[in-house]
Image 1 (cartoon, rainbow, N blue to C red):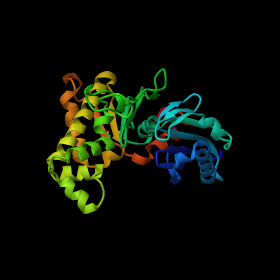
Image 2: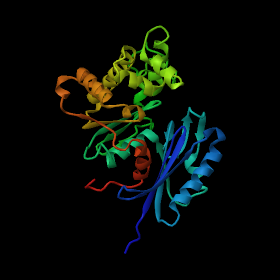
Image 3: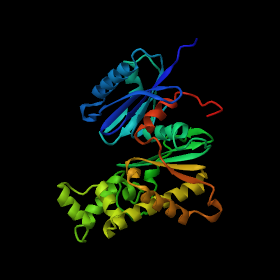
Image 4: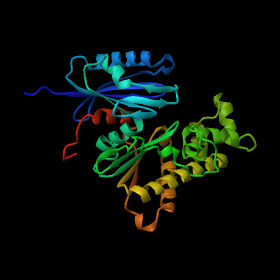
Length: 318
């Protein structure tokens, strides 16, 4: 009888690193999380990560280790070209991990990994062409075309958050103006709210006082659900620009399905409804009913599962 093989998936985030042991059937056998502490430097982080991988996989036959990381990634060499959170540049992550691990290591952008996770095991199952958008602290994305992860000639495809939706809009962290991320990310929603309450009445000020902490994105959505006009304007603006971006994606790629993930999408069904309505408003009539928009099924596990599953070729039945 053939010995059963397992996969290890890793999702490196700005604050946490998730490491999971998965069966080739997609089941998470066990999982651990630890603080990223990227300020300690890549050498320290990689050593801690390798120790965690070796610990979680001890006693199992491992087929490979898939790692999803933020920022710009060269998938061929497994190098983090640039990660703005910790100002990491040209970090040969694959080579560094190979010094500690005996298994095959694959490194991919975390949003691309999450898109593959949703495609194989989540809300994108049974599609041929799928686009994934993650709306969290920032906005990222991944593209599946003809059942393959599409990364483009320079392996940079999928930066949906930096599609310009208003060239006269606010400055984005990337240095450009009017990017989708500058309007609809969690950080941007919070920033708009903090600015708005300086000269407008809002229950957000009451929330801030009652909870004893600054206004955050969660408060903005709570105020929106309560009918607050300031929060309503901010959330509807975000939904509108997301819908505009999705309409452009639909016109360009004609996907079967669009999957929306990330922490902001956990804020409630009314936000999802607004996004769907905005998308329908901008989509050309002949594209109506050719696509569907769904919420993530995997959320925080999507990148970890996807990074692992990129090590495994799809069968005809998947």
